[in-house]
Amino acid sequence: MSNPTLELTKELIAAPSVTPLDAGCQELMSKRLEACGFTIESLDFADEHGAVKNFWAKRGTSKPVLAFAGHTDVVPTGELKRWNTQPFDPIIKDGMLYGRGAADMKTSLAAFITSIEDFVKEHPDHNGTIALLITSDEEGPSTCGTVKVIETLEARNEKIDYCLVGEPSSTDELGDVIKNGRRGSVGCILNIIGTQGHVAYPHLADNPIHHAGDVINALKQIEWDQGNEYFPPTTFQISNIAGGTGATNVIPGDVTITFNLRHSTEIDADQIERIVTEKLQSLNVHFETKWTTFGLPFLTERGKLVDACIDAIKSETGIEAKLSTSGGTSDGRFIAPTGTQVVELGPVNATIHKVNECVSAEAPGQLSKIYQKILANVLAKT
Image 1: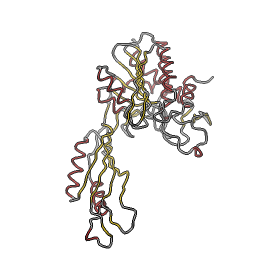
Image 2: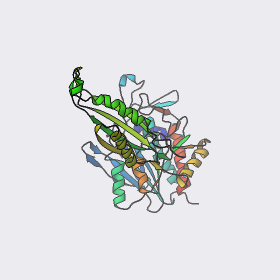
Image 3: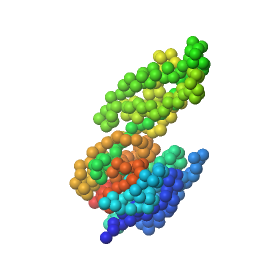
Image 4: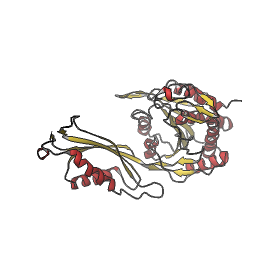
């Protein structure tokens, strides 16, 4: 007999919701939630990047509010010829469910729905409020999704106490890792300015690419911090270098270096910018910088939500989950600053954003049971 969470996962995968498209996923989810007594509020936004569908759903009116957060959009498929299956034709082969979004994050979305359905059947008069915050703008620029919904909720003083983000947090087996925080992300576009000239007359020019070597070496040598109990040390990585006119006999007038730092709670964006600026000034280079903060670091320490997740995983799988703040950013970065306890818990992340993305065919049902136990740990009446 097929598992209902697996079947719903397959329905969601079959919707080609390449960011920022939703392709009907939210309508499918909303109908299931309305049947459970949820009120659904569409909160759609648009900007120069396009239109984004979001919804905020609630069952209950009292505290605490436990929200599931996730996204219906997926990354592009990449070259179809590299797939062993059709990306939006969910297929089970050798015990694995294949399809774009299988791991990131349609298994989690399906598990949200079925865990809630089963929990509400057993606990129709549960404590508090169950909520869902669902967007189609997580894999894209993330300008009209969760960040806008949170702004809307904050404007009307509507608070989330606990939030479970369905990102694929697991490493080797479902439930082995819970993300209870994320590093901050700060990016910089550094333009080193020289003087253009003929390569045969270098004394009449100033080659910014030569300066770039000193700059890169100096920035690589900086010890930003040593991390702490929850976060590894801050890391610095160059992602792009661009310069030159295309001609071999021209010294360029400038070179652009793009870099990113993933930082712990031991340092903030302002400190990073100050350290970089002082280092550049010490090297006597002419430069311009453009800084962008993509996300602030956040941490949810042991408490009601983390303990509820650890207990649920242990009860359903026997696994002792580990806490981690590794990996990239997630929409949790928009939710945590409001004072919400935030964790990320979802399937194994080994194939996310890759061709032949997949999860164990058992994962949807297992994850639904874990989510249902978390709901019971937080909201069931004793």
